[in-house]
Length: 130
Length: 371
Image: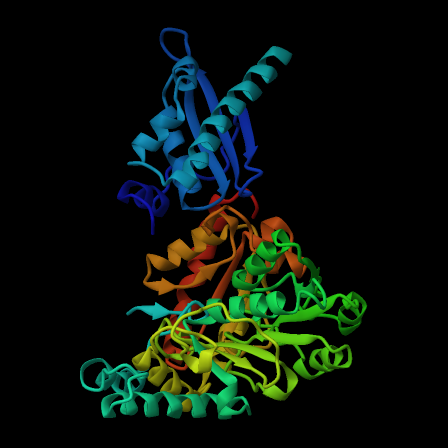
């Protein structure tokens, strides 16, 4: 397989998969090029300083090894962060955490970042509607 | 235990083939074009192999030209006929389920001023004879169709399609790389037939093109006039000898039974669709809701080696065109895995795959948004 050990580990033992109960935001993204689909669920709470944090996060992904590994890693990276911190995560953070991705699979890490942003957007639009 | 189920990609060399080849590397290594006695030994060995291959498809010895494999044979047949017959017409007919070596040769010929018709196939992969007949015009010089298809196993009716070409006086080329020795091929039904060795437990780097006597075809490889001037380049004596031996001992063994056992076992897994039929060594299965590369990689981690038509696994992120042509939706194509057997596979191996695979499918479905 053309993947780093970290990618294979994340693929073999993904963290935080499955639909989250009582989620506050859902980011659904699909890649029109390869057909991968990623659903990212987030649950938001406030920390002791009153800042909104991603208390829990999970994913459901239809995709290749790189897509599944990127999905798992984005949940690890975002969990416990404040929303503003989480939104600063970049695709480079994902690929770095994965020990690199093959060039043709870089879009998988982009998909994970997009899903996170969409999930936050979803949470904010719901909150605004309240 | 390694379980290799990717035999439509390539096969292990049969030990008997390898044994036969050795002496042409280290003992009888002379150039088959040399007039001396050592050259004569090599020459005789090549002619013996040629005879075996010719007989296997009911052809004459001189109708077999050795090449470097299926890709060269397909290039040779299509470009060779196109170049020399361009005054008669510039139209070539092929299908949407060809191997890349046919499709990309045709695409290149389009740039050289040729017109190509890519025939549709039905949901089982068959070319409709009426479609073929309708597509033939007075400009048509060649019809090129894959005999046994490498992804879905469909075997075209050579007699029916060949007769149409004969009636219209159009050359008929078939790519038989995947079907050779696995189903009967009679050279009566075609003008050009591509064959190769490494799909049938022979060595890589050797193949052949059957060119029916009288076929007008241009030469692609110019040089010292090997292969009666049809294909120059020092003869790959060990390869050709190995090819001959592979054909001589070819057989399907228990392949067909094991193939059915695998297909039946896969059908028992929830939401699995079988796309293949025909060839005795190919099972194409669509695992709805999960992605092919993820399945292949999970099997890889269990030392089971298979292939996928998924876009994610291809060099250019393009989904498999054959699977699209038989009507699979994009996501289904991306969920499709190809298992391909050889006579060396065993019942135990198939059962092991059928034991491991449902667990992989279950886990990937748990992760997928499409249950």
